[in-house]
Image 1 (cartoon, rainbow, N blue to C red):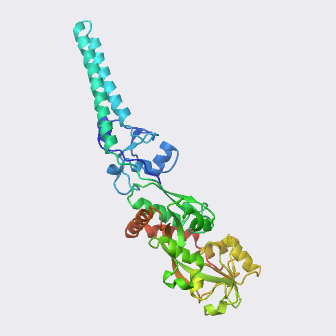
Image 2: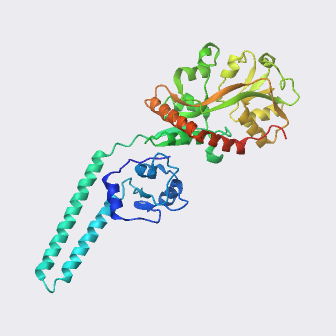
Image 3: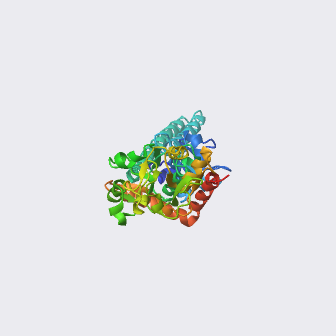
Amino acid sequence: MRTTAKLMGASLIAIAAAGQSAQAQEACQVYEVQANDNLREITEKAYGHSKFRVIYNANRDVIGRNPNVIEIGMRLVLPCADGSLPAEAVAAEAVAEEAEVLTAAATKAGTEAPQADAQAETQAETQTETGVETLATAEQAETQAAPAAAEPMVLITGNDFPPFTGEDLPGRGMFTQLIETAALRSASDTEVSVTFVNDWESHLETLLPAMAFEGSFPWLKPDCEEYAVLSEGDKVRCDSYRFSDPFYEIVDGFFAATGSVYADAFDYGALKGARICRPEGYSMAHLDTVGLTAETVKFYRPVQISECFTALTAGAVDVVALDTLVASDTLATMGLAGQIKENPNLGEVKSLHAIVHKDHPRADETLDLLNRGLKEMSVSGEWYAIISKALQSEIRPLTN
């Protein structure tokens, strides 16, 4: 999602008055919306990319608040490659055409009235000069009135977290779609983009503290009221980070080989002494608060989620502690559904959030943008639609 500086006003009026309509989607033109058009496709044809904010922000007064709804016959300004609007080209063409008409009329009358010819030429020149001066004045007024473009905002996420994030997933993952849609629905002029950085731990340990990016997602929010029992990593989250409103709730569960004593354990105490796999970068808060710490269990923290289940089938670990939705997807992909079982007695509901560093100068702006957009999505039903569509294609049963 990208935005450009919003330049409307006199230029847009001049374009409409000139009556120029480009039926081919080309930059630096005025395009009239046809049947089955949408902003993303128009942007792709005009600019070669799908960042439709470049068109939306130049036509907000015409389109309205929802960029997904454009009507047949709407006249959209397609900004030039340098970000300027095509008003200058259209207005200049109109002035030139008028000058040509005056000159032609003077030439036609030349044989009968030479003085009239000279007068017409002078009139044409005067008209041209006046048009250029008027255009220059209008452009100067637009430049002075146009607000400074907001600084771009970049959020980071990573791969190997299906169905939430992944460059190989539809829409780059369900959570990515929620974040991008929230940014769009926030009605902000800020340019928002999502970048994938696959080293999850570097997000919180290096990149966000260095103010390299505005935020990251998705992250579990630890219970900071239980600060004393939290791991050092989760204490850092409480001390140094702020969280958005919850975008989605998950069940943080426990998985064991079918038939093992851990598959049907009734309390967390039964897991003490076990070898538990929890992927690197995942919060340990759930385990800490129920007494499953480095003092009571042996942890294995691989980078890849699949490594946990490979270790479980090989007998190298006894339990995998993981979000049930991610586990379901991974087990189906690995062909292990039926061999590994989720413990039905253990697990807790947790929420996923976007996260920002407390010291980032745009922390308030970032959270406000995302929270405002999330609220709009919830009211409109768009949040449910995204979740429903993603889960229908991603959730697979744990048993065949």
